Amino acid sequence: SQTIHQWPATLVQPVGSPLSLECTVEGTSNPNLYWYRQAAGRGLQLLFYSVGIGQISSEVPQNLSASRPQDRQFILSSKKLLLSDSGFYLCAWRGRGNQPQHFGDGTRLSIL
Amino acid sequence: DAKTTQPPSMDCAEGRAANLPCNHSTISGNEYVYWYRQIHSQGPQYIIHGLKNNETNEMASLIITEDRKSSTLILPHATLRDTAVYYCIVRVASGGSYIPTFGRGTSLIVHP
Image 1 (cartoon, each protein chain N blue to C red):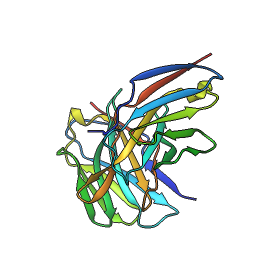
Image 2: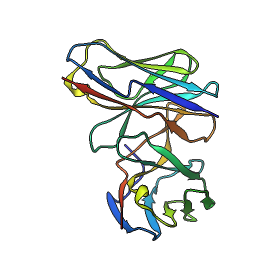
Image 3: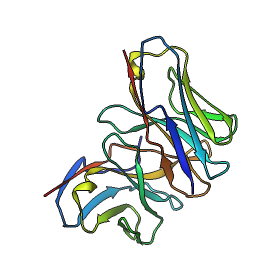
């Protein structure tokens, strides 16, 4: 069966520090991959999605970037974190066609 | 922006059916309707999806109107653990790829 791993579960970082969040998927190949951010009490904001290795689409301009170095690995990064980058970050994968998305457990990021 | 409209909150008595409505009046002929729920501090969980026919699985039933402009998620016997935010989404086309977009959902509170 397919599983998605996302880590760390929680992270506290100072303003201006770098960020690297990793997401990996097992049990499937060539998935669509997504990064979302959720502010407290709000809906999910799509940040990036990828349909293949090295193919990244950005939905909103921001202080973040994404990379997909391997088929089932999706990384969210920042060179210098801002206070506004705080939030709940979710990785998701989806198979081809009309398959639903499946989400990881999320990373709660606090910027001090 | 999400192409769906949901009431911001609903409540339901434990053991009764919870009927969560969703309007998607601009849905196109080949777009599916998906339902997810998110329990506090967790990633969204897939529930069910459909195109035009009613669907049922072990978690819920999905009723889609004949004109496909609205749908209802039914939890037949709600329990306290069904308290969550429920998202109704349709796949939104973006640059040739279909991108699921989440709105704010319906906060369902199941009370004893």
